[in-house]
Length: 291
Image (tube, rainbow, N blue to C red; front, side):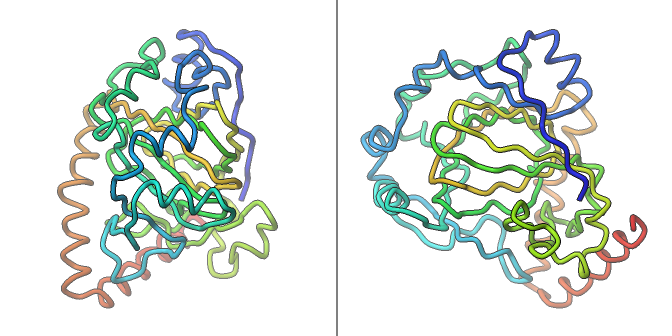
């Protein structure tokens, strides 16, 4: 892989953000965007347990999806408080994603400000919390609706690997899915041994970005950007989604949700192995053209 660091700024003006990152669709980390939010000092494990500790949540392990795995199906369930207790004790490769804690504790919405001075179109009914124990992994994917994301880390460090949507075939994207068939786990230790380049040779030519998020950092991820995240420490972050202003990409995101995902779900239920084998042929044929 050919990796560069993500640009990091302390603060940024709306004009610079739009011209240098939003319009050209380039990720950036804004160090101080959240520092004037009440959440920056107020949100910690104890407070989250206090406001939503009794709520049941689905938790996910590090096993990559296979031919039979339904989309977004949790691997286990527990209460949010019990989960927090578990990951505070030490390494625990379990994560929570797309947890709308604000449905259970609406008062949290008063603790941050939507960054509308930077971009518009935020989906205010759906801010989401992402939580992970040390060692947990969010495998390489892009967000199905192609929305832009402001992802703010509140606790713990997390390492993020990013690729533009255009690199999808070098990343071995599964047809009718938003996932890569390749495993990028611990890519930063020793890419040549941790990532199987013999099986996935096109990855050597993939152009991406690498960054470690620290508490208080906000990462702007343009719509369609591939991302792989690893929790170096137990922590949590919040994503604020903004609809893509492009009508074409809005329609493509709608197709991904209503059409593409429905077809994949049906085929996984009716002919999982035949469907998986067909996908693999398509994946490697597309990657071969890139290599």
